[in-house]
Amino acid sequence: MPQTNNINRRIVLAARPHGAPTAETFRLEETVIPTPATGQLLLRTIHLSLDPYMRGRMSDAPSYAPPVAVNEVMGAGTVARVVASFHSDYKVGDLVLSYSGWQDYSVSDGSGLIKLDSSLIKPSHALGVMGMPGFTAYVGLLDIGQPKAGETVVVAAATGAVGSLVGQIAKLKGCHVIGIAGGVEKCKYAVEELGFDVCLDHRSSDFPQQLKAACPKGIDVYFENVGGAVFDAVLPLLNLFARVPVCGLIANYNATELPKGPDRLALLARTVLTRSLKIQGFINSNYPERHDAFLREMSDWLKTGKIKYREEFVEGLENAPQAFIGLLEGKNFGKLIIDVAE
Image (cartoon, rainbow, N blue to C red):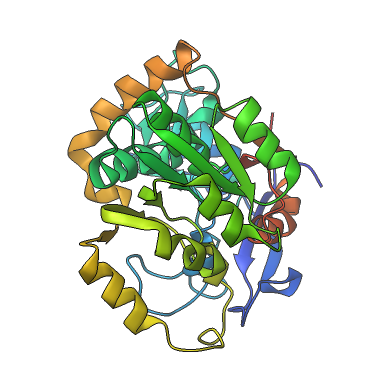
């Protein structure tokens, strides 16, 4: 059923998943469209962002943000249009970046909304290259990774919303860039379209050997999006004073127990010590003072063609659960967005 003018479809968390989410994790509901009061506005969702971090919000384990409550709407960034307004700062027709979640309509008092600049090439860019994923790549690489010309930068999930930008920014800084992705097609895209020097398929049986051969001078910056076997291959190649920004661990998001095999914590700790490594997790909201610089530089890079960005659109709010399940399995190619309405 497409979006209508008289029904609010919403997708709620039906149950906390144990392991990988399934169709039963979500429930599609139909409710009345909310009515805005004085000082409020009604938003109609146009684009809905799907991102790996949402898997963490489905769990009630302690994290940097509160979990989604069972039977509540799944949270998400959205591009929305104002369709009714009793708020002096917004008029009908305005496009805004909001956090309306997986639903057709929502009411806002204006808190946290950002009016979208008409100079945006595409409104959907506010959810990707000019939004949270772009800012994550920017501050993670430049502020924590601190790449220097001539250094070797390795990035996992190299064709994803964040990784694709990390590699391109590293190239702009004069680095030798090695991407890691899942599949021949993605690796080809990273090299031929994004300009990476090399891209390796982590599914290859000899992936660790390929990575070692591709990094004869070792690794100076490793941008961590994945974890698991990819990090195991990276760890022995990290150079003295290497930097490891950690923004995601998608290989472990559906895990229900610690990985099998020997305890490698002592190996990690020894490597951190003997090679003076800097391994730092980060949340992009910790860097508000960098946001203006990000917007200026990324906008310029995008408009001048120095940065390329790929989006994958899935039509229909009802298809969000299956698209999200596929995202966690690496089936998407670029920034994944649900087209909720025209």
